[in-house]
Every structure is written in structure tokens, then in C-alpha cells.
Amino acid sequence: MKLLIEQSTEINEVEIKITCNYMDDRLKRLIEQIKLYSFSLVGQLDGVSVPIALENIYYFDTVDNNVFIYTINKVYNSDKKLYELEELLNNSPFTRISKSCIVNTSYVASVKAHFSGRIEITLENNEKLIVSKHYIQDFKRKFIF
Image 1 (cartoon, rainbow, N blue to C red):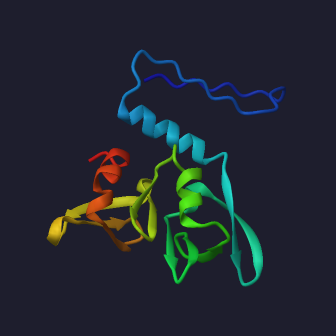
Image 2: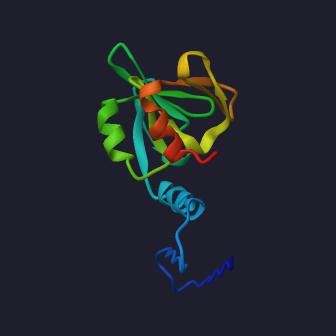
């Protein structure tokens, strides 16, 4: 792989161009990561709205019809429903792993088979989540073993 970087004070906007003969899963994953840097969501913390860059979000979880945004050390409230986030993040490393959770596969540190056909994932912050049987295939498509 060759990486070319052109820096100039005359350039107003970052442009990324990928030239390849075949787009494999690793390249697709890299493109998904690049897309994260141009997108953020708004979360609420102590009554204050805060923009949160997608690359800083570990996962989303629903408790009592409230959606929470989990980062490395903070938890924010979201005004979006989980299905809205799932649609919004369709072409990204995020994938639904259960009825109440969407995870950023970029932060998955390890995967372990769990009893009853489910998968236990450990995130880089050592938090453990369970992938339900119904969502295993979707998770495997997003997470390259």
C-alpha cells in the first residue's frame, strides 16, 4: 500500500482518494473508519447538549425506553431511538448485537463463544456485552475475525 499526503495552505477541505484494483474487507473497514471522522451525534449530559464524534462512541444501549451513548468514560442521553441510530449508522462499523444494544465493532478487543449459541464480546475498555443469536450473522459481517 502506498500513502500519499499533500499538504498546502491553499487547500480548504480535506480530500481522501482511494485507488485500488480490488476492495477487500480490510479496505472497506478502513473506509468505514474514515467516514466516522466526519460525523457526530448530540448527547445530553447534565442537561447540556454535547456533540460526540462517532469514533469516540463505544456503544448505544436502551434502558426503560431511554437510549444512552457510552464513550470510554462518560454516558450521555440520546434523543434518538435505537432503530433511528441503526438506520443512521448502517454504513459504519456500528451494528446491532441485541434488541437493546448497538456496538462499535472498532472497539471490540476479543470475542468468545458463550453458552446457548450467543457470543460474548469484550470491548477495549474491558466492558463485556452479549451478542444475541439473532444478531450474530450481522455482527460477523461487521467484525472481521
